[in-house]
Length: 113
Length: 112
Image (tube, rainbow over the protein chains, first blue to last red):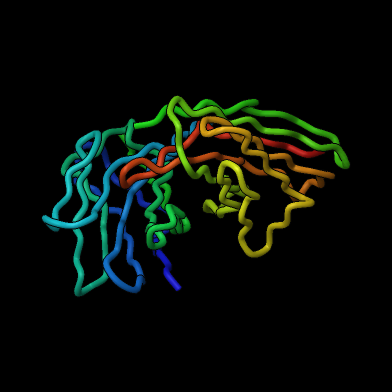
């Protein structure tokens, strides 16, 4: 069965510092991986995806993620955090061709001024 | 991308009653998905709604509790029936584009 794990419930970082939100996955076959962000009282917003190609994927709002097949990881990164980046972040894997998403448990990112 | 309108955005309901959540998409899609996000939890898929056929439910979810309608390719409803406080959650509908999924803004349900 496919699964996604986000080992940190919360990540705290100072504004201007780089941030990393971790994600590891377990899939059979080639993974379709995604990052979503959820702001309070809002739905999920798509940030970026890895389907194939370059291991470094660039997405919205200056975020990027690095796909590492040997470590089965897909960590979300940003070189310089903003207070407005504070939100709940979800890593997800798509289940085959079904369109279903399996989500990690979520990581709350807190960026302090 | 797809624009998804979901309503109501929030509601407070009495236990034992039912609430129907509507999801409207700005383009025709084959499959629509309904997820539940319990307080402090991740998202869990409830069911997949295909137009013209019965919804397919995930393990732990049943049609009697969460009946779904899919009358056309742009619209779906999810009903939460005979509600209890344990049903207090955010319910989100979703559609899939070429690769990524798009979500409505969610319905925050509180059962008292």
